[in-house]
Length: 237
Image 1 (tube, one colour):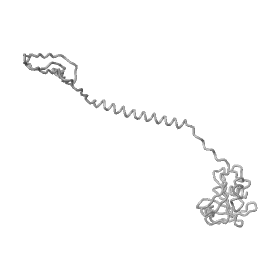
Image 2 (spheres, one colour):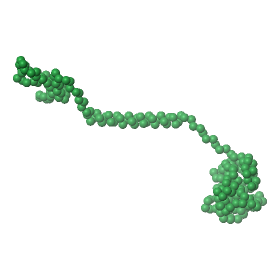
Image 3 (tube, helix red, strand yellow):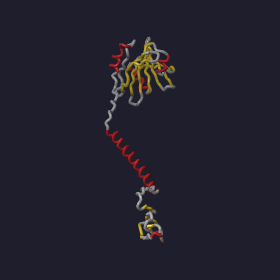
Image 4 (tube, one colour):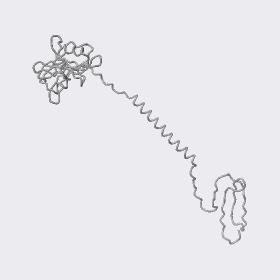
């Protein structure tokens, strides 16, 4: 540097040059000031220019290569799947381990006791079948009120074959009541223990019915069952 001359900014440059792309470094400045440039190998990398004697340069982060971004995306998706599976397994274990109440089985209905309870509210004495087969299960014994207000004493049994047979009893029945019991067409009569019943067949509903009328009271034994099961219930009335 010549006396009285202004200071000269020097810049250190590291870059690729030379044969084979070897990295070299050196001080660069005006050659007429007598500054010498010394080149020496430096690690390979991107060109970096650092100002000497000035404020520090801001660091610039280059974006991650595409392959790295792809691996990150795959890792994130895999983590999400694993987390979902863990949560699902935990919920399943909770469902299996938490005790749940078992619904009580509906036991046989005591038809005679039910008839005694409802009798005060009926305009007739509710019939209680006698001699019902031991393997039949009484599932219903109650008053059923139709849309027209007609009260019916209704008893239903489940048979061992999986069918059902029931008793329906009402006073001053209507035509709609008869249709609901599978009244169908007149199929003749049947004598059961000295009592005559009218056979009613309703092919549309698949119901078979034995009917008997005593004054204002109508009894109907109906169900989806065999003829023998229908006769067994009617014979006990």
